[in-house]
Image 1 (cartoon, rainbow, N blue to C red):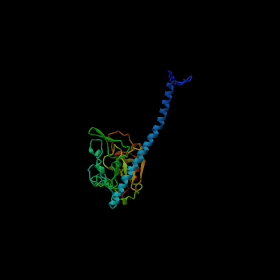
Image 2: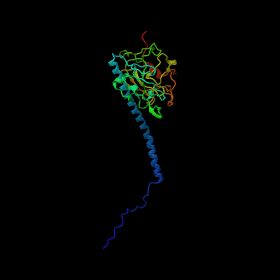
Image 3: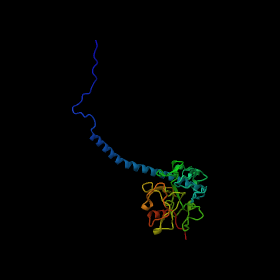
Length: 282
C-alpha cells in the first residue's frame, strides 16, 4: 500500500507579522551607526596619537642611552654635531635631508654604519631616528619612500665646526661633566624637527637674539598635537607642547619652510634658549 508523503512543514504566519525591515527602520539603524562612528573616531584618533607619542619617546630614549654610552666610553666627551652634509666619523649622524631624489633621504647607512655615525657603535636601529608620526615622503626612481630621519641634535652639544655657530658668548658643551647650567635634567639633547625644516643632524638655536629680536632658526616638530618629543642630558624624555602659533605654522608638504625667521617675544624660542646652553663666564 502506497502511503502519501506528508506535506512539508510550514511555519504558520502570525497575523500582522512584518515581512522585513521597513525603510524607516533601516534609516534609523544607519543614523545610529553614524552617531556611534562619530563618537568613536575621535577616541580612536586620540589613542593613535597617544601611541605614536609613546613610541616616539621610546625611540628618543634609545638614542639618549647611546649618547650617554658614547660619553662613558670616551672620557666624558660627547658625540659631535656639525652643519652640512659631509659624511664623516666625527659626528653623531650623517646625511642631508630635503625633498629631492637625493639618496641621503633614504640611506640608513648614514645612521647605522660606524663610518658615518658615532652612535652606530651602540646598535641603535634605524627606526629610532624617525618619529612614527612623520609622514614625509620623497620620490626616487618613480616610487615614494619615507625619509629615514626626523631627529636632530642640540647644536650646543659639542658642535665641532671651526666657529661656534657665530655665538661665542655661549658655552658649547664638550664633555658631559660640563653640562651644569642648564643642569642635565633641563638641557635637551635630541628633538624631532619639522619635516620642512630638517636638513643636517643639527638643530640650531640662536642664543644671542632674544626678546624683541628673537628668531626661529630651525623649527621643532609638532607631530603630537602641537608638541614634539625631546630627550635630556640626564636621560629622561618628554613630549613638549609649543605655545605660540608662530612655532607651528601651517605645513606645506614637500616644501621647505623659510628658516631664521624673526619671532619677537616667542615663549617657545625663549624656552629653547634657556634649555640649550648658558653664557660663558666673564
